[in-house]
Amino acid sequence: MYLLFWKKKFVIQYQIDDYFGKIIGIFFDMTLQSHRYYCERLLGGMGIKRWKLKRKPRSVPCNQTTLDQFRTGLPSPKPKPFKMPYRQKTIIPPIPAGFRDSAECIAVQTYSTNRGYLKHLFQFNSFTFWETHPLTPKQSLLYRKISMAEIFKLEIARYKRGVMTYGNWIDTLRHTPGLLHAVHLDPGNIPTPSEYGKLVSHLGSATIKQYFHELVQECMTYRLIDGKVIIWDGRFLESYCAKNKNKQLRAFSDRDAGKYKHIGKFRGVGYVDSTIICAKYNLPLYYQIFPGNRNDNITFRQTFSESTMHNSCATRILIADAGPYSNASLRLVKSAGIVPLIYARKNIKRHVIKIDTRKYINISHVPPEMIPALKPLLALRTKIERAFSPARVVYHVERMNNRGMENAQMNVGKLKCIELLTALTAVKLHRPDLITRPTAFRKYSPEFAVDRMKGYSSEDPAVPFNALTSTLCSEN
Image 1 (tube, rainbow, N blue to C red):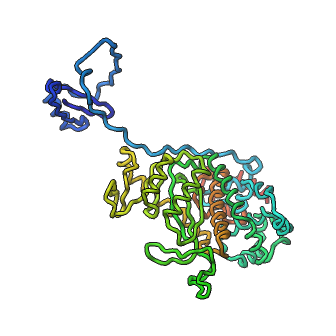
Image 2: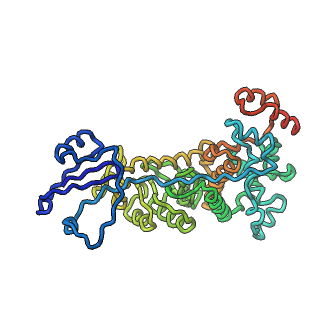
Image 3: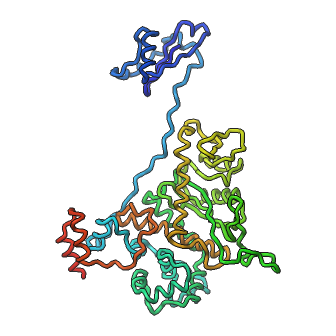
């Protein structure tokens, strides 16, 4: 028999020997000129021509029988190629009418170098969760002078400004009225560093995580998170303690922390931030904290199991490095209806193929049509490294200010909330280019002068300078 392929068309030309059991298949790819030439010679010019239209299939009567109906085992056509998961368009809500006509809004939307201001994080996002959260008797005594919502806003501003210690942050607040104006804090309510640390420690990791889940649901509403492709990895968070154990106690000064090693090298004493992100905009989907000496298989399986209970995303693919690779991890992910793309070790012999240099994948749980697209899919794993880098480069929170598992969970939870608040503010300001910018909404003084706008008017002639200056003069 002769089998002819032309794009999506598939033709079978049977020979008389096929009906006597002597089946020999000869394939012709009609997109190649040499194959078309040999096909015309063998079949007497019966080839597939480019300009012929595809014929409509005719319905065959039930009483009609042919020799082909008595044959079994017909060759199946080529499988459909794998397609990447479809990315839905992000929903951009309208800008509030009171802010839409202001010079500040015009400047933010007109000039790409303008990355917004700190007050936009608190102006365009709701903090009613913190204002209406029920307080315990101890919290009611602590938050009499300053509310829990104001403390959380101050922590968001501290992370955005990249201030590490509480003492430096309180000095910055006392000498920078623009920060107080952005957070809407009365200058007479600024606490001391010790009081501020106590107020921050009583926010509660469970409360921050509950607010984080509300932000995730809001991101899903605007389609910033779809969860079709998720990525897992762990990040080391150093604790505020000595790197050696106390000889008398035979333990670290932080009892909850553990010694962290990566590729056989000692990195410090602290915790592991086990995070799952969405590959669409590198936004966190779920996080969990473990001691630094915990095995990656345990952290991965526990984090993945908890994330499936909290999130209802239609996830199709999970990508991870070789740390959590095991048969138990592969079966756990496959049982949830997700394709596990976890890097395998080189010494594993069964069902493992080489994708790239020092990159291997177990294909026992991978659909056959996905195998040719494994290389571009696994290239998405570096997105989680880019999602982790702002913690060290921008926010400077790679080391804790305190000790304990509770404080570690609060530090990581505030960091994840900042990433989601930044993405939501960028969408509500109609600046989708700022969704993944950690340096966006960092400045605290939106000051506009007519002399500064004169320099921009020549660069962008689409903006009428007279209308812009008149608006600025009316506001100033």
